[in-house]
Image (cartoon, rainbow, N blue to C red):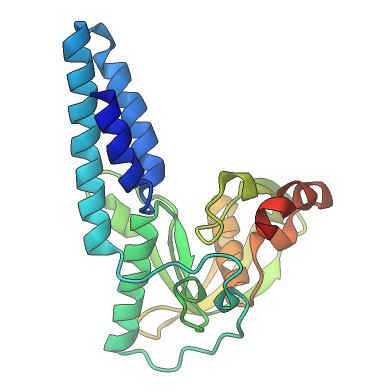
Length: 231
């Protein structure tokens, strides 16, 4: 049974949902601990297989675009302002959200799916229950950061475009920011963002100007991950 689980894992690892498979396998084996030996193995396999099948199906229907992987030039390319707020933009935003959710992220910028536009989407609470997850969705076109707080916060950041866990590291960001942007309809918003949402906004804003989180790592962290970037 466990051999079959590992065979399933081989194929599931090829998708952006791979990280969830490892969690599922561990959870299934934990749930099955108190069962008789045969039942334990069967339960672990069935639980892992059913979840992997669901995630693979979800990924195949949601992931409309491929996420650019470092060092893809698209991640450094100049981006254009969004000028047309129409059905095509709405479709692009839907693709962004689909890629973001399918990959287990909290935000994604248009350059990360190969579109050189000053546009990103995010949701700081994508696992909220009862449909509340949709309330956190934000579409950000033509973003501006008007003011950075003097206070800063350091947090661990990674990227959907640098999937290796080893490429994460501490990044220092302003604790709060004043921002201006347009939504999918072209309406202008001015807000003050704080904490995690402020960090997500700054991270995604960086993508629209060709900056990656690895550019902001400390010298020690950059030296640590450089071999993986060069691979």
